[in-house]
Amino acid sequence: MVLAFDGAHLMVAEQMEDLRMLLSADMDSRSPAALVLIGQPTLRRRLRQSAYAAIDQRVALRVHIEGMAAAETAAYLRHHLALAGRSDPLFSDDAVAVIHDASRGLPRVVNNLAVQALVATFAADKSIVDQSAAKMAVVEVSGD
Image (cartoon, rainbow, N blue to C red; front, side, top):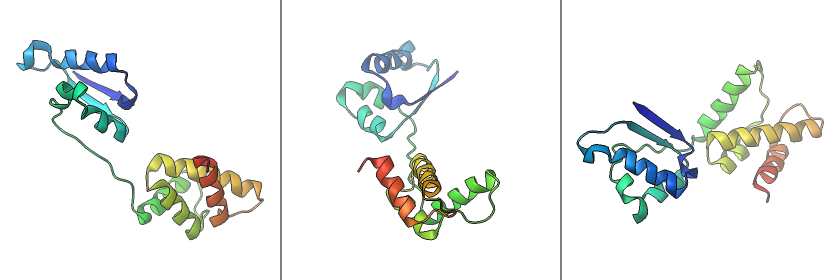
């Protein structure tokens, strides 16, 4: 049996203790389940705390996904636009650079910034997302 917990960084201490008990069944002679914890970087830091040492010691594999490079961010945006049926450029190179820098290449943040940049572009009655729209998106998403 495989159990996957997405958003594991949001689990409360009691839930983490339940996982520890599940993983400790049969005193480690066999594992009743394979456990996949999916979460933000705070999960990794949390598991390193002494209160979660028993779980941390049972982790067999750790995978950390880095943000995309600038070229990958540009390709990611083009791919999503192509999926939406857009073949011509919609984001200027300067706008893509702003989105990439602000998002550190993290896909969810790229998505949020791109959507807000599209809204700013529409509000300005423009046809191409430019650097100013991207900067407005950064302010809107980050709250700065």
